[in-house]
Every structure is written in structure tokens, then in C-alpha cells.
Image (cartoon, rainbow, N blue to C red; front, side, top):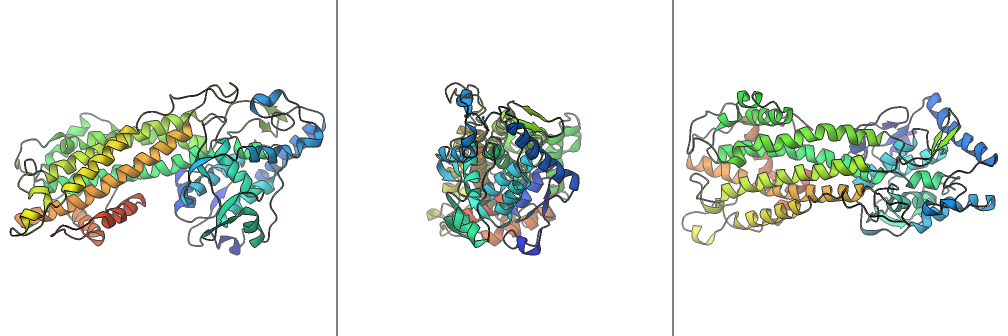
Length: 525
């Protein structure tokens, strides 16, 4: 790829190579969130395989073969033969009649993740598409020609047809895109780049749309944010232990060797590292309450779940998941159901439950901190006001109420989407995955949980400072002190009531971006 091709994607991050290699979740996140470009592999064998699949399909059709979605109708209309005179027009028709998405449009990171996932799937060489189609998908990423993809309208099998139709439409110069910071027509973006919109070859419309790229791209982003939240929840537990004058002994390695769930032990190790150097005394209670003492057990569930979720997400990411598949070596056309998104659906349903439990954990810790019946001597609602002003100051009272609301909403969204299969499309699509709905639900749970984490971070830093003010001998280990300083950049000490919404929003954005997982964080993601 030439140097000028990196202008829109960002020169500072190494390009992600597509073709002949497995992508990782981190590769997709690099494209979606770090500005990385993509580059198609230079491997001659890989390029030949792509061309060979498209050529075989052309010859197969010329020999009079019938191929679903190429010279037949789609879905229940597979029994309808399409005359050869209309075969060339069929892909465009598919993209057009699926242009019925609704809801909010995917943001830039989500859109980039979706395109990267679709490009990587087609790069397996089992979809019968031409090399030029892969090049144009790479152009969407590298020049930030971003289709405006409505989030709603996919049942997750036959893949993400309706949302992916917006990717296909952008390639053919139809519908709106975001380009260089502003909305415009797709054809105008291609014109600005000195290119003509692509004319789809037979099967290319189906290959673009009949796959799991939307749910998979969203799952990659969800995975990363969940891993970040698990680590942050451990750090906040450590700081809450200090603020509550609690016991570090609850996180002794011996306890977690006796119950050897790897993720639970990992979470306890994170907390121990953050509390290193703090003397352990019985304090106010022999045993801290469950939201402190059992925090590694809660966080550990998410840690362990992320292990198998990575396996399933990356398997889906590195799969050929459209239909039919084109075998360029055996010269076969195979009709199957790889567009079914059941693995992503199950992973996202599981992840949203694990993440919502993190929200509940942090909300319960916050409730302890603000309540002077349980916070071991801290001011009511963590107010930092002087005694003269204390009667009219309420500190973090309202923030705890809001945190409870966000937590309740996150918990409400844990109803699994994957069990709500609906027979649709004239009972052809009579068992569907709902994987994209599950992924969207998971992202909403993540957003709400990041808001809870932001509130918890502001309140817990306030509580630790109040503990220091009440007892100058309180030991705050270096990783936690550094964290407190970092949070203070966004939200200084609350000595008099003020509207905290701007600080909460800024903190939430920093958490979503993984800002607090620097050199002192340790462990994942």
C-alpha cells in the first residue's frame, strides 16, 4: 500500500495485514480504535487463491450450473430461476431491497470493526469474490469512507443482511457515508478519491451481506471493553479497601489456591499488587462485607469467561461465514449455514451477564462508601465540606442514586437474546441466532457499567482522600496513589457540592478508551 493510502487511516500505527493469517481481537481493535490501516497480503499464493475462486465460479456458471443467490432468487425464493440476462443485475437488487435498517447508526469504531471483520472473512478465498472487491473494502477503512449503518434489523441468520447491505451499497456508490468528517453520498466520496464505484459481480452482493461481520465486529469491541472493566473493578476494590479501612488479608494467595479458578486468582493477584505495602490489621471488622471480600470471585467469573469468549470470537472472525461457499481447489459449490451467528450470540449473552455483575459489584461498594453507617468513620455521602457548610452539602448522594439506576438498567439487559429466535422470511429463516441483538445489548451493558465505574472512581478517590484527612498515617500504595492522581486530573476533590455530570462524562470516556490500564495496571486486557 502506498504512503498516500495511509493518510486517512493514520500513519502512526502499523497496518494490519489481511490475508493468509489469523486476525486477533486486538487487530480489529487496532483498526477500529487506534487508527490502524489495513494492507492486503503480498503473498502470491494467497492472491492466486482469491482469483481462482472467482474464476471457477465464472466458469461454473458459464457451464450452466445453478448456484443459490447467483442465478436463483434469495432465501425462500431460491426456487425461482433468474434468467442469465438478469444475473448481473441481481447483486444490486439484493443490496437495495435490504436498505431498510432502523435505529441509531453505528459509530465510527463499530463501523470500522464491521468492515474489518467482513474483509477478513472474504479474504479466506471461499466466497468467490474478485480481488478488487477486497481492495475496495480496504479502501473503505483506509480512506475512512464509512457507511452509515443502522444498528437495528438483523436477526443474526442469514447473517447480518440488512446492516451489511449498507457496506455493499457504499461500494456501489449508493446511500450515505461519513467521509472526512462529514456526511456525503457514497458516489461523491469515491469521486473525491479518484475512483469509480464498483460494479458487483455475481455472488459479490451475497458474499458481502450474508455473514456475521456486524455481530463479530461489535463482539471484538465488547471483549476489549469488558477486559478493561474487569481490571478496573479490581483496582477500585483495592482502593475501596483502603478507603473503608478494610483488610488486605481477604486477598491472600492461599485462599485462592484453595479454590483454583484461574480468573479469580488473577483478580485477587491484581488487588494484592495494588495493596502491597499496606499493613493488614483487623480494623473495624474481622471480615469486610461481601462486595469487598468476594470481589475476586465476582471479577474472576468475567476473567474466566473472557478466555473461552476470545476463542469463539476469534474463530468466528477467522471463518468463511457466507453461503454458498466456493471451494477453489476442489472446484465445488457448497450450500450450508455458516452465516448462523450462534457462537457470537451465546458469547455476548454471557458477557453482558458477567459485565452487569461487575456493575452490581461496584454499585454495592459505592453504597458502602457513601453510607456513614457502613463506611467506618467517613463523612456522610463523602462530603468534603467544612463543618460549618456540612448541613447543606450532600456530596455523592445523588451520584449513588444514579449509579443504582445505571446498574438496574444494566441488569435488566441481561435477558438473553439468543433464546428469542423468530421464524421469518416465509419460514426459510425459521431458526435464527439473534447474535447482533445480543452484541448490541452487550455494548449497552458495557456503556452503563462504564458509567457506574466512573461514579465509583470519583467517589472512591474522594473517600480515600477523606480517609487520609482523618488519619494521616493511612498508607496508600503507589499504584493506588498514581491512580488517584490520574482521576484528579478529571475530577478534583469535592469540597463543595457541584454538578458532576461533565466530570462523569469525561471519566466514562476515559474508561471506555482504556485510559486507566497503564504501566501500573498489570494483567489484562
